[in-house]
Image (cartoon, rainbow, N blue to C red; front, side, top):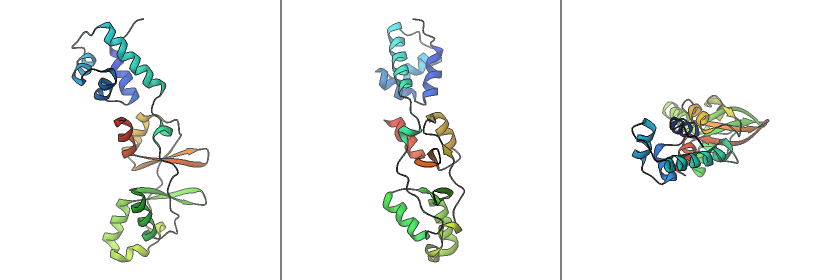
Length: 183
């Protein structure tokens, strides 16, 4: 079997794992992986074989939206009061959630929006309806979306919704992506 050393870095990045994580899985140090990837070390064939085995195993069970999403999705309606939305967010330890009316996503509510409204209106903000302070809906992705795409999308959004057909089946935040890399 022929191995292209240059493929290691490409495969690792495509899988969305760090050098440190790959090193742990292979049983070597992160600096060793860095030296191999940079071409500063000509590794033994047995080590290259082991690295490719680990990468191929990871490709087989690659991280996708379905594997890291939270389900069921907590949501509020546009007629929910801000007080009720805050209670749900605090009770469940969440920073954001979709706003849904009749099974359709119509917006989102985030900690940032809540804090801005409190700054603007003071304590009276708690009686305001979510529809008056909701932000645009979170992007919607398929359950099979890969970690790399999810990570890129989360740079511009606090969360992503996962849908199967017309049904919202999960939500993913930056925290979920970090947790996936840690595991």
